[in-house]
Each structure stands twice: as C-alpha cells, then as structure tokens.
Amino acid sequence: MPLPVQAPSPAPAPAAIELIALTKRYAEGRPAVDAIDLRVASGSYCCLLGPSGCGKSSTLRMIAGHEAVSSGAIVLENREITGLPAAARGTAMMFQNFALFPHLSALDNVAFSLKMKGLGRAERQARARDLLDRVAMGHLAERKPAELSGGQQQRVALARALITGPRVLLLDEPLSALDPFLRLQMRAELRRWQKELGLTFIHVTHSQEEAMALADTMVVMSHGVIEQVGSPHAVYNRPASEFVARFMGGHNVIHTPAGKVAVRTDHLQVAPAEADLPGDLPRLHAVVSDVEYQGAYVLLGLQEQGAARCANAAAAYSVLLPEAAFLARPYQAGQAVQLHWTPAQAHALGPSAPATAQAAP
Ligand code: ADP
Ligand code: MG
Image (cartoon, helix red, strand yellow):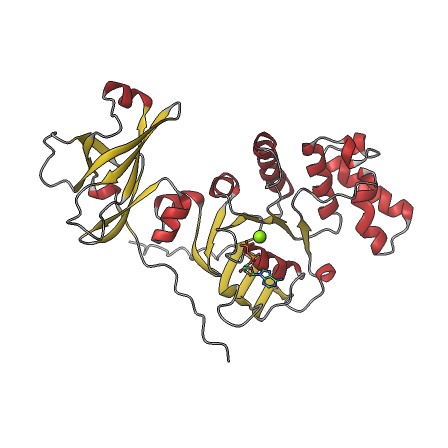
C-alpha cells in the first residue's frame, strides 16, 4: 500500500506589515505602545480596536512615519521601514472627516501630493483623473468638497490617498465624525473598495460594531498592549479575557468556582424563581432591574441576589430574549428569577495580556 503523502503545511500568508516589539514612550512610566508584535496579512482588512487612549493612533502614526519609534521595528513586505520618512514607506493615510482641502477641486485634491513631488501639471492631472475614474468620481472632478456629498468626499479622499501607489492604507477613525446613517453607508463602501483594490487596510476605531462589520482581523488593544487578535467571529465567540468580553459587549462575565466565564447575553437563560431546573445546571438568583424593548429583542437587565457570594454580590447581568419568547413569558422589573446556562455556552476567560512595562532606566 502506498504511504500517504504528507501535504506540506501551507506557508503563512505573506505579511504586508509586521510590527516587532514596537514601542512608543512619550514620557516616563508605562509606554503608550508597549512592545507589541503583530503580523497583518497582505490584502486583508485589519482593525485596531480599543478604548480611547489605548495606543491605537500612536501605533498607526508609527507605521505611517508621523511618529518616531521608541524601540522595535516595522517591516513592510519584508523591507524594514522603521526609520524611513513617511513619503518613502509605501503607506498612505486617510484622516478623520477626510480632511480635504476645501478650496481645491476634487481633481486638485487628488493631484496634490504629486505636485509636492514635482510632477508636471499634465501628468499629475492625468493620473488624478485616472484614480477619480476608478472610484467612480471622474464626472465630478471639478467640484469643490463642499459641493460633494459625504460619500463622494470619501471617494475623493480615498483617491487622494491612493495616488502615491501605497501598499498599505492607514485610516484613523475615518468614520467617527459622520452622522450615524452616513457612517453605515461609508463603512460598507470602505469595505467594498478594500476588496476591489486588493490593498491592505489598517483601520483604527474605538467602535467594536464598526470593527466587527469591517475587519478580516481584529486587534483588540488595552493600555498599549494587544489583548487579542482574531477574526470578528473568533473574538466575539471566544474572548480571551474579561477585558475583551466586556469591551466587545454582548457578554456576561460570571464568576464560577472554576474561574470567570463569559456567557453571551443571548445564551444566558432566564426562568421564574420558582421553576424547577435540572439540578446539574449552573445557575444564579437575580432580580429583574430593567426591561428594554429593542424591536426584535427584549433586553433584560438583572442584579444578582445574595450577599453571601460576596465576590459576586450586586453583579449585573443582561439577557437578550427574542421578542416572541418574551411575549410568551413576560418578565417585569422587580421580579425574582433564576439565570442558568449550559456549560458548553460558558467560555472560560484567561487573564488580561501582561504588560511588559519595566521601570524606565
Ligand atoms: P488612542 O488612539 O487609542 O486613543 P493614542 O495613541 O492617541 O490612543 O494615545 C495613547 C496614549 O499616549 C494616551 O495616554 C495619550 O494621552 C498619549 N499620547 C498620545 N499622543 C501623545 C503625544 N503626542 N504626547 C504625549 N502623549 C501622547
Ligand atoms: Mg486615536
């Protein structure tokens, strides 16, 4: 019998950007970015996600070359760019609110950086026009930003960022200043352009919803370190730590004798206090504190009862019930209930990512 041939294990996808022990220290004490390691796959949409002040923009600005690195290295497609000037890196940046020059036409906005490079007028306009055509804006090339819709401005900003032929596009909260409706539209459009152009995008946001909607890979940061890297599905379903579970939302963090677990709000079950549950199900006793109608779902807010479990006393939980389930058995504020879950739906949480911060020399 022929021996089975072992298929060679697939090579890891080539990294567009690799960060190696990247550190930014503005002052004494804990660095703003603390020796992070990260590989961003070529052609992927990567979101850096975390609360305000966790070091997202500092990381992005170091990649862009707008901020000096304190230590560590940045590699773009196997070329170290740590010390290169911004214009020589092969990255481009798209800013919040698109930051277009208001007094310049769409065409001149896009051609601007070629002017800075000293290209002649005819050539830079031809290249700018090409790019505007590519983002379906060629017919509005002569308009000023104020004469364009938010969506059209975003396409001009995209064309302006792409004119230098970057390998990686860096976006710092590009949608934060938009009204909610436009934000959803623009987010779908960003995702579409990224796939169509096949470029690597690194997008900074503090919105977990935005990151989940956009990212192939989410990088969750806290206090200058990376807490978790993974697909939105993996991060949402298997949060690595209590921090990630709480930051992502949609989870309850429950203390059990075996340690802390995360149970999704749509997986936590509620039953009347007097219900006779199977004896082997983990459970806790709580009082409904809040009933919030959300359309397809009803969100119950609950407070744990029983000061005896002091580590957990007064812990707050949420249960998301489909509207039909709630209508079949409604709960009211003040009602005593039992919460239970199946062990398979409880995800064990690890400790938060350790900081490598050492005392400054
Ligand atoms: P984020 O983008 O996640 O909100 P930042 O990277 O902007 O976070 O900031 C990380 C930390 O570094 C914060 O504590 C912030 O106050 C500090 N910081 C950012 N920029 C500077 C700067 N230019 N000088 C000094 N401290 C800064
Ligand atoms: Mg920021």
